[in-house]
Length: 356
Image 1 (cartoon, rainbow, N blue to C red):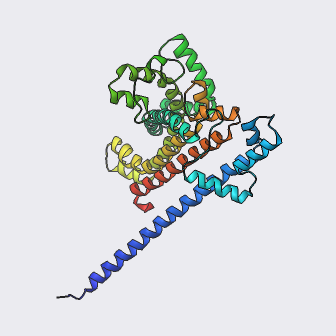
Image 2: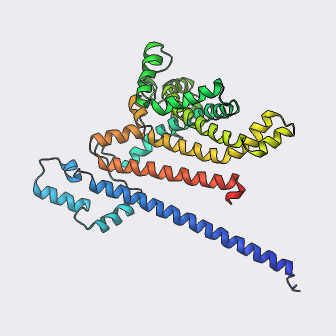
Image 3: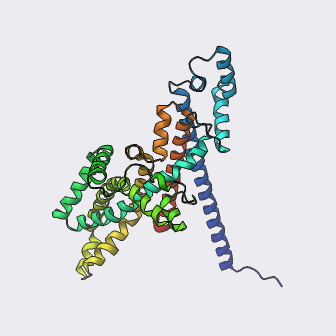
């Protein structure tokens, strides 16, 4: 026996349909934005590869290659085709995971990046954790103690972090903590005696050594990563403390904070629940951006500490005119930056109902 839908049922059905349409349109907009951004990134890397004053054929064959070998290599690389067709072939190869072969290592670039990127990821992640655990509380305390000594310390930390070059701070750290005090291990990711003792599962030596129960490897890896992570973490502390302080000062001057204090609420609750709760979402965006910058900006740190990450790999490729490795690394860093921004946007919508 069929029942006639009531007006309330029809209203609910229409509301559910509109919600479904809105969700579908939102997903389609997200996919379209992602596709446009990724296409733009591919176009930029393609143009860089074609406009840099480095002939890829000569980089492969050398300066003494014959004219016939040079012409054959151009045909094999597809450089004789129109630019539009070259771009199509480039996009097709990237979508199939083919970033070319590195001239320096003779390995597929994608395999080299799989090997070096986890080291950069581990270093940037630990540095970001240091930045969040120290920088965010420092910024909050500096805002609540405005123009007092802790506020001056926080501003001084931010000033030094914005002014001192990272390579100089890294060299000074090596000179003091490694060469003089012997508190940490030297450059590199691990002592040679420990190479190959732990199977790679996550790409992080710290996590893999813990999972394997190899405590000697864990503490040796921790001793190697401590100084570079502290150097990068200091810059993260400087940036996050400055931004947190700015956000908190703005919130602490709002009327709802005055009202909360007038009601007799404890100062800790006013600061950490009401004021900090309102900056948590924008602060999440700042942390994600800081993490992205550490991933792409750790080149100098990796060079100073001989850290076998994507920064060192990219630098070596640049010095040896290995354009496949340069473009592949640039593309991976760009994709990582896009992914982190998309993740931040998704988290922003989850934690802030106004964004939905």
